[in-house]
Amino acid sequence: MRGRKKSPDIRAAILRCATEVFAQREFHEVLTDDIAAKLGIGKGTIYRYFDSKEALYFATIVEGLKGMRAAVDEALRQPAPLAVIIQRLVETILRYFWNRRDFFILLHRHEPKLDPRERAEWQQQREEVVEQVRGVLERALPRPTLGRQHPRQAVEILFGMIRSAALFRAPGDRPAALANVIAAAFLHGVTVNAAEVGRVTRGEGVAGARLARPTVARRQLQHRRGGKSIS
Image 1 (tube, rainbow, N blue to C red):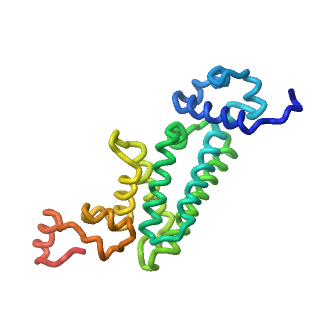
Image 2 (tube, rainbow, N blue to C red):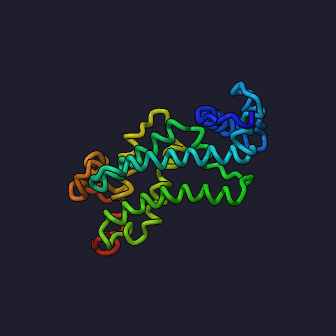
Image 3 (cartoon, rainbow, N blue to C red):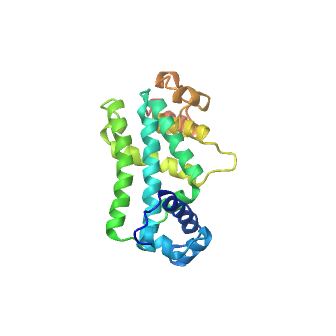
């Protein structure tokens, strides 16, 4: 038994099952026996691939992040205008979360049981994705822009928008449509005319994206300042 070669397929099956079970219950409520029973294998088989329940939990996160990074790599591979790249990136991550709901739940659950070294590696995997996107912004944005001056914060804002869209998605939400809205709002703000969102994310530029009319509050403030613009 000890000399038998480990099977990548068995390991992958254990990870898929563990991700599902861990997402349904808190870490301390899950037994290794539960995962083994769901798979129809002995608990000893799981321990041939993972040293402990903690190691298995950690592996579900790392494998999911590696898969997400590969998907992001593919999305960023083809050169395109910045708006197109951002839309493509957002849609890719949303679809990844859509198709891996259990992984998404685990990714955003703060589990104190992880070893500090495991948590550090988890953070490193995420950091690599952040660096990918930060590099895109630094290369594509003009130097005076806020996103170019503070790329790390810009990436975290973008990821926050993606996370919220995935976490609070409605039954009728679709990744492509959400990606258009998120990309337009991220690049040009929520004052972009809603009818222009598609043009913005096709890379037709800010010049083609007309701003919506000033709100009542904005017009009143302008009036109090003697009609001068506050922009």
